[in-house]
Image 1 (cartoon, rainbow, N blue to C red):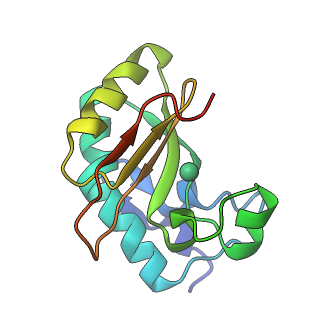
Image 2: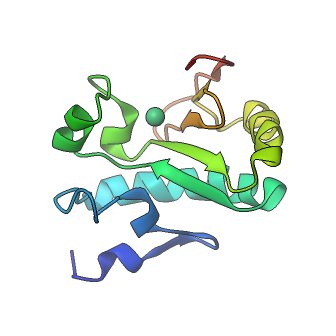
Image 3: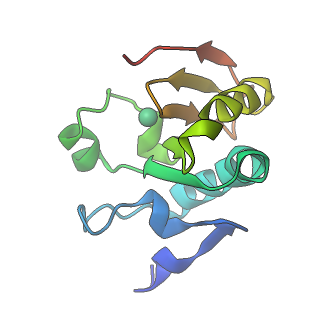
Length: 138
Ligand SMILES: [Zn+2]
């Protein structure tokens, strides 16, 4: 990909750089397919959620195998293919609305919530599992 590929706008309020954490992990470069998957998540989940609850901060999005190991991600994590993000609301008071919105969204594959942040995943290639676990991370 080109040098400035991380500036790609995936949806109105999300750009690719927010999902890569390149300052910390310069080698965390996605494939075109990974970017397609991230775009799917933005268009169907994150952008609609953003319109509902206001600004959303991505703590972790795409992870290559090395980054996934470094952060202690599970094997086969959906982060490896751009099909998941760990996010929080910029305004903590909106967090419960984010959960409520994502648990109702038919595109949600897995929703695992923690204190003030949550893991949301999507799957462009299969029927979403709609596996919702509130308070999964303590
Ligand atoms: Zn996650």
